[in-house]
Length: 247
Image (cartoon, rainbow, N blue to C red; front, side, top):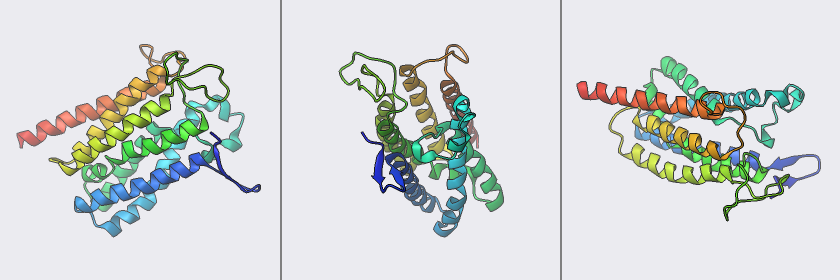
């Protein structure tokens, strides 16, 4: 598929950029819905979003640039070209956590309640971004003889559509996260559960992708980060659950 959605000659609009923008707009409406539901003033939340969005984008881009530094050190002008693709989900999550913590300290809004408003946004955003990866023909997996293998641009044999594995899983995870949000019993559980399952999916899907030299126990950097986030989310979820039961 052509990654260019609109070509006016003097400017090109890429599908990836459109889909990332769609993810941000959709994520805003999802998060705002739950923010109001959890008692956060809607207008106040809108102001916070103006801070969150650029911070998340910058964090996501920094993570991608670091991972592909061998390319970007020779092409520094392309560091800001996010419309061509190249956002690291782990960087987005870490930036969101940092921004959320600072915001909660300044505004006195509960960090965990604020985090929960973004719980369903995590898988929802993955649906749009992974579709953008597919259109760009990037993040595909290893060669495969399976019937759903796809011959991507620049390849001569079918490969795992790894980005679609993650995107399809994200659709189901979004429904699950929405149910968690609607039946929330304690602060933080929606975000932590969402982060846990999204990270586990990434850990598993990356086994289908080309593998360089492993960082730890044969795991790639993205898998190590996904595993760390999953463990952090799981341990925090368990600790908060026990603390609530003790009270």
